[in-house]
Image (cartoon, rainbow, N blue to C red; front, side):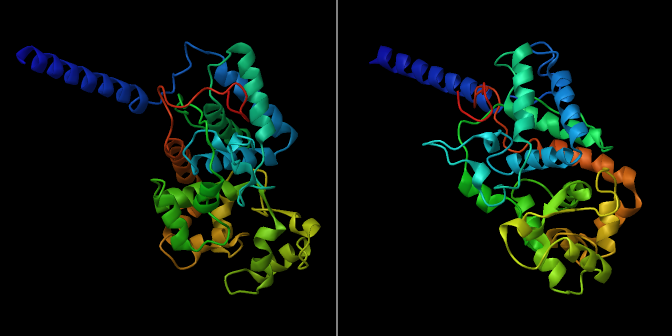
Length: 327
């Protein structure tokens, strides 16, 4: 009996120790800016070349790549789940309402992955490529750069339902937006800061038609008139997809004009204008409208913070060979 008790105790301790080791490997691994320095020293330069080429061909792609990172991180965390295609077992996030015929840049990420695989097969995750691409896209159009923390791994699942429920919508009011960001560990200030990415990019007519046709008091009359000319009131597939720049003044440059627009009631989307509508975030918008250096610095910090949302590290997840499918 004594021998049995001793061996049982020792076995229990061994199991506990092993469990802690495994948990540490899976959960406590840290992202690091030097993660690929030894395993794939040319990874970042390879990605940067692809992103620069894509943005030079189409400036709008910079906004699309930043948005792609955002839409990835808000669903299951920054795990490249948004890149997975539809299969018999995967309901792709690409067809979720906020993403369908809206999110772009998949082919650019695929190109970057192909090029990285040539120099370092099965080493660099698609999730890290998405994060690096957002940084490089920002810098390519005059925005801030930042040190991207690396070591994310790719998910084997996607969630269309979470994409439909968790991603911010262009119709959201201020408190709903704040709650959506807080649910991801981001503050109201982070929300305003990240919304500043709308200093570049375009939106479809269907997302701002109601705003420019309802003659509300929170929209500049001249701005509304200008936007109506490019967005017919008649709802149709062709009309709905007509594009307008989110920033009418400097649509292809990452600056702080977005915040000036909000103060002048020239935010294109309802979810933009509510950031300056007599609410708790007015002071942040005003601050950024006067201090571009502060905005760019805090945008970089907020992107780093967003990139930490629910990452898979250590032995969790996989390194996908092709970003659109599980190995």
